[in-house]
Image: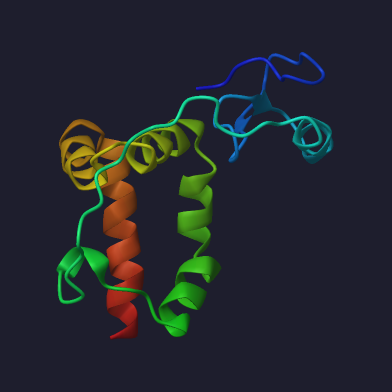
Length: 127
């Protein structure tokens, strides 16, 4: 979801301020300019704190070797350059229930399903 840059008013603002999560910007220069006046979140969102079981398959952390392999994958980099996939991932990440959002998105977005399959192939090649 692209919008207008809060600083230069360019219509192709593809980035969102991580502090206030509302301001859109188009470049590092515009982000730095916005950052000087950003007040952070204006609305406090309540999130339920959930105890996470370290044995849960959803909380498995990647090793440095796995991260390096993912980082080096040209296929994954190309996929992540897709604005549609970026929007889907952002939507999952900002959801109040990311696990449920991921499960629903996997069923309704073929590009996400393909991306996850590519990630798993890269990780399986390590093991």
